[in-house]
Length: 481
Image 1 (cartoon, helix red, strand yellow):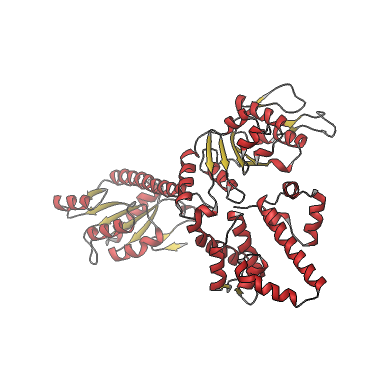
Image 2 (cartoon, rainbow, N blue to C red; image 1 turned 60 degrees about the vertical axis):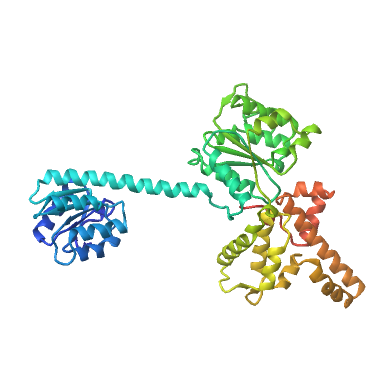
């Protein structure tokens, strides 16, 4: 491989780079040999100040050694330009015609040091090693500052409304603690996203967070999944099983929709929170675990406490810190931003690069009420991108979603239905009702068919039959924010 600095091996690519600038070829060759041999760095060479400027962005040096007296651009001017380009680069100025004034000016302009020719090779080696350490520290600090800016707005959250900013501020302040956290909020507000941000910003982020969908499992299965079991603990237990609490040891566990955990299991969970230990089914011994617990719910726990459906002492154990996710009604100013974010996301994902949105459709999306919050908005935009024809999302596409306000669509629907036979019109109305009802129902329960069935008074099997007849899939309504 060949560059302006000569030939070097592939193993040198990962070494820190020192750019040497001098109009004397012998000086360049000598410094290249010394630096690469004794400092473990890679030397790039430039015979003039202008040539050095050309190389700066390409070789990205950690240190620059530059002569002062050069024909096109002297070392002091080069120093100023380097500092404007990247203040983390450490610069050492060299000259055979040194004066005190030059040395003072170089240091004022940001040089790390100033040396006169001829110089001792050992001094140059020590200087460059110190410069490499200084640059590494400065660049590490710059990287940390960038990470801190990301902490203020964890990845995945879109918006600038005061309600969201307050929530993000609280998340950033409590994330890197071991405090148990209860995340509350209506369906679709991003409770799981908040939990993931808490985990990502904590000192446990190197290990994966474990998520438990509490209402998805019957009580006996949920208990064995949480705490594990020993071989022979019950029929079908053919081998030992590690529970999810043990899997989350040293990490975070999210108990999603904790309000649906049966009361007997709440008692065992309380013991885990108090004692920091679990007892697998079929075992007498207890196992210590280091797990940070985050629980989420969209239900009124205080009401469930009064009705005896949720233990008060467990509530206080979980409710050390409460984070309440704002609804879209509380983030109205963020709705246009979210709409365009999801449009860009799905247009890219489904490669519909020429897709546009009519002004009328956008206006209705802005004004529409979103009871399912961010999840409903996201899923609506996703479906609009998928079903749009002729490269444009129109108001008629929103009508299929039930998203156009009644005042603008009732008359057109009535005219359409009256033009059909009675049985055909009746069938159309029932089909539209079923589709809209099921979509809203599933969205409000995060795609959980069991909970949706309980809410609407149907058996799970009956609800699934209706869903199949209308080609509705529950997973489409599970949040991925």
